[in-house]
Length: 288
Image (cartoon, rainbow, N blue to C red; front, side):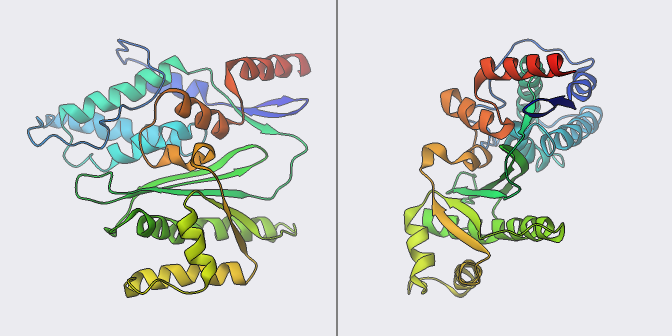
């Protein structure tokens, strides 16, 4: 942790160095996964028992890192965590890419900005049918002081029939964590207005705000719909539209690459590109 004039920088460089110790990094990459992350080859060759144990241990170490300061790797690590019972060499290759990404970005920091508010802002998104069994994936990011203080990426347990249904499931699941965070902040003595819940599907917002669920919804989706609607009526939350290009939680729903990955990654860490990150680190050194 480094105290700066304009905030606090947090990193886990020592932990990353320990995780990478003894690993053979053959290349440097700028994202933790390719578009093939969720693809599971039917002819995948299983790892032997020794490699299987190492795989399980490495995934657990990366999960610890991802849930604290390196949310960029959470989607990949979350998927690999579902594979620890029967990992294959394909899974091992995907794990090696995460190590390569961490090696290339070991100096990245998370910057919490001074002078901001304690009001949490919540981004919830879902990617429809991205898994081989037709399941969708929910992603969620809670930001405070200009950086992500909480990230979630999980495969939905309910198979939905449309992107709108997937978004409703993701919204209701994510609200549990959002409301918990809101109540935790208020328990510290802070007064909060409605917590903003950002959603990039205008159809979902219209459904929630209409006060009624479409006729084709089944009972379990009705319950999820009215849960979100009730919380908004109580004044606990305010569902706000956020364009897909600015939806930070998109990085938690599927593997991203290129400029969009960099943009959302910088939003998670509270920085905007390498130049700003280096400037923040220099400020920390001067401030000390």
